[in-house]
Length: 210
Image 1 (tube, rainbow, N blue to C red):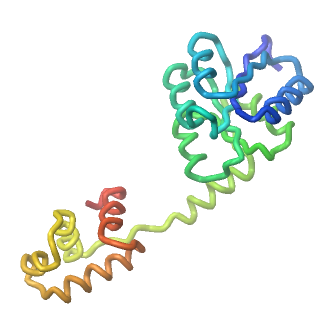
Image 2 (image 1 turned 180 degrees about the horizontal axis):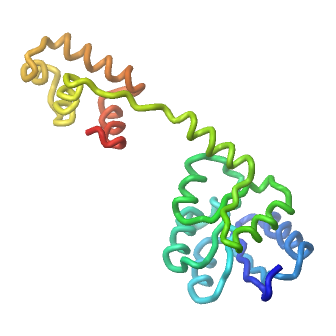
């Protein structure tokens, strides 16, 4: 497959996982120099001072989150390929791992052959996602709710809310009754599916609507 051996670092704090992957990689072929680390900091120290081609990285580590490890590796050593290997099939974790520069994300439940083929693909410059991860990313993108638009009056009320003004003060400035202001507020909470004004303001800020 490769003209020379590639150095593969496995970062995982579960001895069973490490031993299992060591067996898989050894049985698959002899094209890899395998290094194993049980925590993030020891892996980062080694990678900083030694040449590593690819890192199989767990998310839950005893000292530093795998997401942060990935970010540091890609910042300090952009040429190193990183693949998330985890049991955590969560959209936010997968997307953040990819945003931090990972070349792929595999769940530990996949077959050994899929892991090895994934390593080969990543070393060729491809991005690798197992089917379950693809499904999670796809479902999230199709289910992301659309943020409702705001009327002119709603925008006026929200701006005053953001300034920390009371219902009485808002009613006075907009020349409305307090009951009308409260009705607007309740409708906005329902419209954006939030529990209170603080959540509403955070949501609007996140979507650059405020």
